Length: 612
Ligand code: AGP
Image (tube, rainbow, N blue to C red):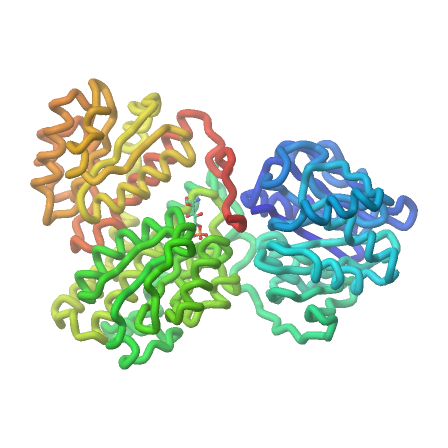
């Protein structure tokens, strides 16, 4: 959710913090703030409701704030409405300590009541301010910030990444984490903390990932890390293998469009190293053939678009593996007493690798004896580190809140894993295996071909953008793909939309179809094409306007019934969603553009959902 950054160095901190916050604004954007410490002015805090631009204008790009040590925050509100006072940093009553926080402190009320009884006065409604005040309380007792932070961490419950500065510490900032991401960035004569590598990549590619319970002291000379007992810890450094241009728009008007266009390359990166001489090679997974043979059940756990990848994979994996695959929303999994045991393979899908619901569900699955395999994009993220096995999607940084290239790479990676497991189980024929490998290898080139001409989709978007309710219908893989098409549309264009299994329409929902209702009919799953056609006829008979999506070989047939048709290249039925989802992403994008929406940062959303 929120993005935090901290800098300790020799340059002016404020412009560096603003730059880092801008790169992390996708994490939350309802208010922003910075705190800077200077020799002459002590701690100065500036914060404001609204986008980062409001803050940046207020402090003239940082020029107003002098000082080489600071922390910054961009917020996605949980406790307390978006407002100037609820914006971070939060400051202790004396004004000596400033703190930024990402996460939720669950027992904040009880601590707040205790501090109020001691006479502490609060200015905001947030759980985060409680930590700043509690910190001051302990600091007054022990006069040592590290010790005080350690005491606070023992008292609070919940999730957090903190950045803290104190006026008594001229060049040190303190950081701590539990269940919220935090990286350490090692620069030359300067060091950083941040929620995400994108915030510091302009200054350094050398990073380390903080672990739960760790506390770090960051100065221009170095970063010392301690465990919760304040015993020093050695951190392994990693070098980030992409550069700043990967996290910039590169001439595109929006990150989302750039990321849609990057999909063929992203898929190539996911697939190429994993196919050798026609065989799927997953060097990173340690699943033995014996273990795989004993799998009795597979769970796929995820949220949002990652869950939709799971829905597509369910259809494909059950065919390939002949094992039951249950796709469960991560937010439900923990509370449904899941039937996981040591013969359960639990596949966890997450772009960010930080989604709290998904992480909590994964822990629950492990606790019940399941073996976890994570499909993750962000290297070093919490889910990646905690899973028994991890496969990275290698999509590169995804900045737009609406996922596109991460979804596509997850999908194709799930196809590879399905094939790999099917081979170990002996449930895939030799010809089937070879055809799927060949089909997967052709996807990037087929996708590039359809991305070359987007004129039709722009036209359809201009024709349909005024609709206020849209149905996506389809069967089997088309239904699963429709869920993603519908989510894309609603999250960025704010048009109400539903994805429905076509066969289910007549059991109630068809009553909502009236003259002019837009139905996006998905008919790209060839085994059920004729049934898809019948459903188009059915809704047309009730006056619906139908925009259909099908494979190129059926375009003409579909055009006889539907009002408009989008065609994608033909491929194997199981791979068709990889090609079909692209025009749905573009349709959502151009509809949102027509409606003047803030495409990369849709209202109320954030890229990485680290609260329950
Ligand atoms: C999709 O466009 C979303 N923004 C959202 O549904 C996302 O897929 C979901 O929050 C899960 O995120 P994750 O993959 O990072 O776990």
